[in-house]
Image 1 (cartoon, rainbow, N blue to C red):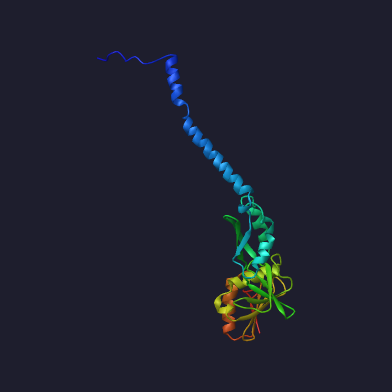
Image 2 (cartoon, one colour):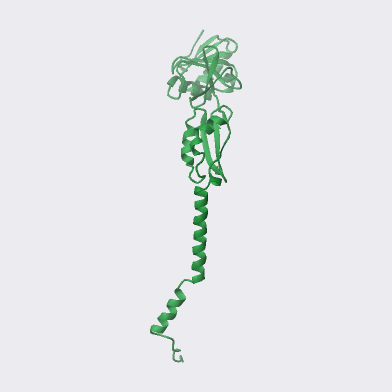
Length: 244
């Protein structure tokens, strides 16, 4: 049989005990206040004092660009607190340089900003006045000029090369889809119009390709006709090719 419940405190005295137990420990509050003050002090020091001002702009990943040129674009960050340096603004300014495909910007403590550049790679070389070549990447962007072609870059004649030029875009698509059996034979390319891509082969023969439509079928037809010994092959209409 259950006996009577033990009497417990009630009324105002119980309320006082409960409130006392719930009050924050004074020592804990003091520790929290000191920690907050120290954090604020450290923030102010980093924000406003010279030892944490940006003194160096470290540039990596460049070969076409001069690192000094990249640093100059971001020079407004010099002298600012490393915390105040606007990394997005620096990245946007560097990305405006034509050779830059992408860029990452980060803080390098205590007083430097690191700029990591990923440059565009040449895909086409467009001759200019028989002296220099415009370097164009696989997106059609003109980003550099060189005196000679080095490496596996297509030699292509274009009237107005650029990412908004249809002849440039069609030519890039054709060359990207070209099988190695044909690509290895190409010496140069002429693209007077979007539908006028013509491949000049190393043995003197020509291959009229047209635009970048039906590339797979054109390649099969071209392989067959070139193997038959024809000098000039036109596969711009692969269902009705012509030869001479």
